[in-house]
Image 1 (cartoon, helix red, strand yellow):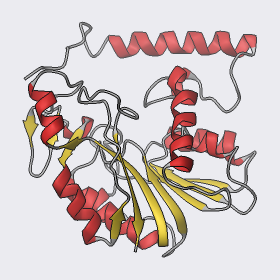
Image 2 (cartoon, rainbow, N blue to C red; image 1 turned 60 degrees about the horizontal axis):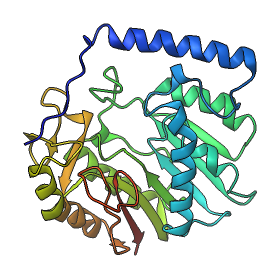
Image 3 (cartoon, rainbow, N blue to C red; image 1 turned 120 degrees about the vertical axis):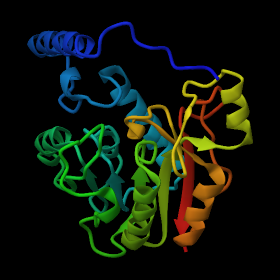
Image 4 (cartoon, one colour; image 1 turned 90 degrees about the vertical axis):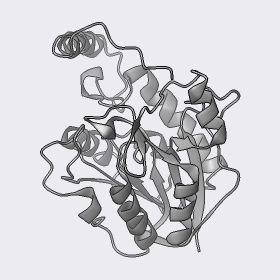
Length: 278
């Protein structure tokens, strides 16, 4: 199997150097007025980077509309909303009848979204979920498998999870499926990304083509990091399909498989599954 390339800097040094560099670039951007007010400083972005913030957000807005049939007047829930990467482009699309709610375990991202987005778009709301995650929120007081989404039953038309089920374990994922089903209206759609293991992706991993090789086997999943499995998690496609059926969802075929495993002509990096609640 192909192994991920190890970084050549000690973990204790490289992040410090990177953060210092980000603060310097942020200061220069601020002085020169080069940063859009709805783009976070580099030093605050904890998933991806500033260059990809707008690009990925705009890319996924197209997918929400073209693949997920999102309408401007619908009610949207963003599970694991981060620092607003999907929220920002939606401010240009959702109208006065539409709304957006997002929650995340990283308090810094939520606080930035409240200051910069909710202050301008009062139909956009953000909540902190103090859920334990070994990588992103090691001091969390609540387990994901016990967390009740803070919304009423059948509140949303469209629920999105981008790069969330790639970072949580099976019991937590199954519980989230039950909560998604609870808060979605009948006929509503969910848009979720995964790393799905099937014959094609497994063959590409074995051929050394994949970005991630997922060498460590857990109970019902595979991961890139034995000590911190939430770093990146993959699931068997058959298991994921089973969960959709169990909680009353019908997958809108085909699944849009991603390029993460070395697949050619993929739509985007992760695998996209869109499903409707029956």
